Length: 108
Image 1 (cartoon, helix red, strand yellow):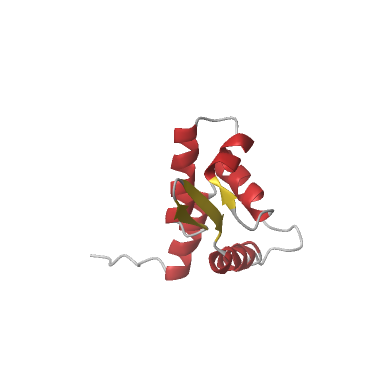
Image 2 (tube, rainbow, N blue to C red; image 1 turned 90 degrees about the horizontal axis):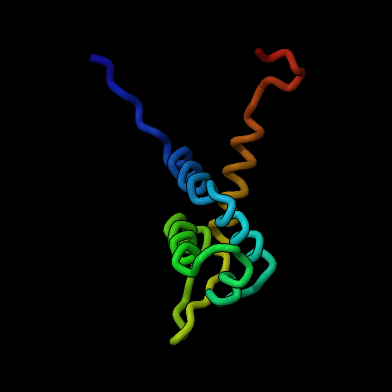
């Protein structure tokens, strides 16, 4: 019986970031937050053409992946990009896309 190999920590982290960024609304949220030092939920909601509950779901996905962080300032919630994980995601995606050995156009 063949033993299955496990995914590396890097592969799992890259997949987690990719999944979190796998929706246009989340990309829009990240674009918006990248231009801010901090931002309140209402500001994010005003930028997107979707319901508040849907914005909350997308923010939860981004937060669970570690790409953003939130802080409660009753009665509001303030969000910002998690700079450490933003840099990690940038490096992981860069390494992933630069690993192709086929540079000359002779690939299948």
